[in-house]
Image 1 (cartoon, rainbow, N blue to C red):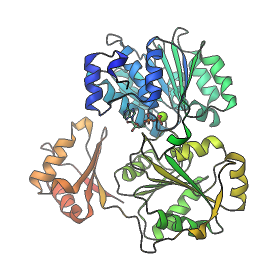
Image 2 (image 1 turned 90 degrees about the vertical axis):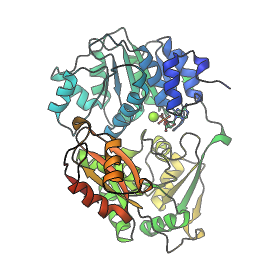
Image 3 (image 1 turned 180 degrees about the vertical axis):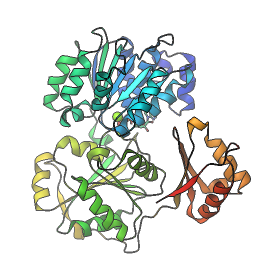
Image 4 (image 1 turned 90 degrees about the horizontal axis):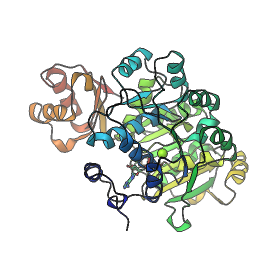
Length: 452
Ligand code: ADP
Ligand code: MG
């Protein structure tokens, strides 16, 4: 058995990995970390949920020069949510070094605030292609010192039409650099990008063995998709379900339908304001809204613990989309279920993109009429975050000591720059809300409201 020790990493990094609960490298980490440390260009492919993020972040953080004042690494990813997630991992992993600054740059948030944060110094830039290019054109990012370029989910960025933006950015990076691509899927057309961006790249591909496949896949032939969706949920009775639709409008309709049937539902699509996207995702991950209806925006990279059922309400258009959608479950060696609901058109589409899957009749399922998905917790938002030096411990302190809430009734606490969110059992949420409204966190009276 190979351990992180075998990869000859510094002791303080090993300690940090242990404290984060990483005991042993995954196969893709084992194979790529040594190559990346030799500064090689790399194209890496491994299935969804196999730990690709740590594989590219670990060598990067090792390599960062603490004396350098300009950004040294550029990570490009297709969605804002994925940028945030990668930044979160980078921050955790870099804890053992002093003062590594990770800055996210994506649309839907104020440019001025991003510029202010860049001016304070940034070591790692993580962004979506459009906003990065925007900063570059305004000369608000300095790319002259970048020595590592990482593209996560590169094939998706091509699909979204970002190839030109990426090429423009890359042509302005120093020639002497390490360039790295990570994804679970590489369609043929990726060559266009790789030929220009990478120099003699090493290719690492971890094939997943049939018997290791952790996601069980089902296809149902259906007439009424709404009805079939309810049947599916009430049959499989998941704890956390992610439902994919092909259009933004459809996500809103399906959410509305499920809400009408007594489900607590979040919606995620590109029409929402950035704060809404953040709050929807947060309420799904903290269990307040245990169903998420989303477009392919949520298909790439998102690592949400304990999603046990993914449903394709609409059949995806491409094999890659299918792979990434269902890959939101069965992560890091856990198991998961994926169900695709197909009308006649969907069956035709599916036979093109996943010819091996066989459809069953939806009538073979036995739904439990009385099953609903409702959050045991709801979310309170507090008008103060990192900037006001609010920490999870401060919120816990006020809730438990001052207000008398039992610790076991408090769920996830998320702290952002200027706001914080806390999940609280619905049975005591009124008490918590009133207490927080009248009480103090860190000696300050902060505004509080309820998300629903
Ligand atoms: P991918 O990018 O391959 O889809 P992620 O990088 O998002 O996968 O990782 C999936 C999950 O596996 C994450 O929750 C991550 O924390 C976890 N993970 C990554 N590396 C390890 C490891 N070495 N040991 C245990 N868990 C890991
Ligand atoms: Mg990933």
